[in-house]
Image 1 (spheres, rainbow, N blue to C red):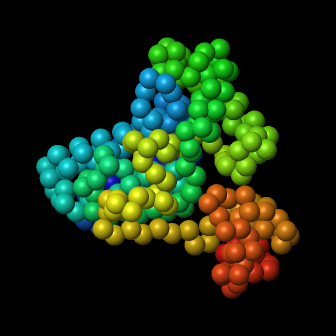
Image 2 (image 1 turned 90 degrees about the horizontal axis):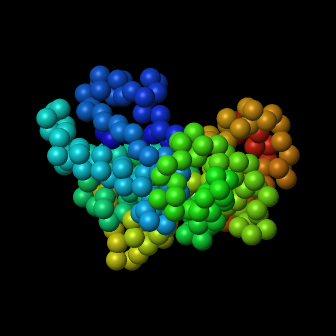
Image 3 (image 1 turned 90 degrees about the vertical axis):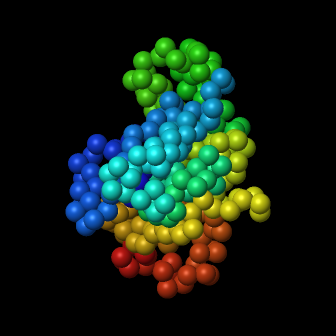
Length: 262
């Protein structure tokens, strides 16, 4: 079991004691997790550096597993990669990454986000972050910047994103300025639109989002039907609120907040 932690592509929680894999290991699994670059260091679209450096770190960890996990009692031919939130988004990306082909057999994605940036949006974000630091979005220009300063610059841009919907539409409502970038190289396409010539890297995939809205419902209390509709209408990709209501009337009908948030 290879764990990829989440955290809006801004932080990696491998050291989180609640995610240490002890329960799975006690049940007989061999559990491996690894840190990967996040934030601007891992996902900013910079001239002079490959895109998706955080994903490349994950692929490197999976190659390490192939080489070393047998020494810990693991089977390199039976690797399941799994993650939550941004970790799940990373797993979905790994499914269509050429550099990850053959490195795992199964994939589990929990609380899977659907956001992947095109290079135009990613370039705008990187340019704005670099401008906060008085620099250009080049790897050599940002190499000497203190990590904390990069974090603060990205936070400033995040706070401004919701005001950019006129240019970028719903994607500007993402809570993070970073997501995997569909660069045509490291990530040839979004996981939802793989080339007909490409096959997913895993033979078995599982994902789950049941009762995902319950947490928000508990925080917000009762909300109106119009407010419920706003959520899917602002997601990408989406069929919109009307499409969801038509397709899943028992799960997306009226009284959502009072119906357990399903």
